[in-house]
Length: 88
Image (cartoon, rainbow, N blue to C red; front, side, top):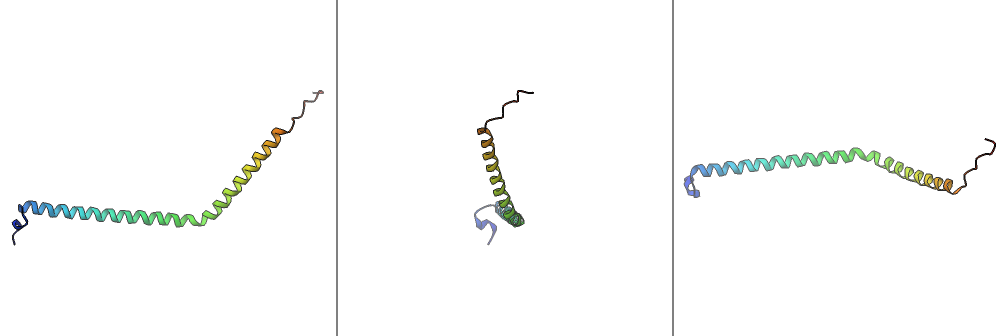
């Protein structure tokens, strides 16, 4: 069967094959890139896991400390300030 049997000029047939090949190659490159990105993200998450519990604990501790400091600041605002000494 000749190339003309595909309904076009042989150069157009070659062009279509070449475009198909290039599209397939681009899809393959994109797939490989996406695999690398997923692997990098997965590795990044795994490397963070050991610190997650410590970080959570530290965050809770800092929030509790902040609340205590706010409470302490409110107590100081409600206490009368000492009056200046008349001797100075």
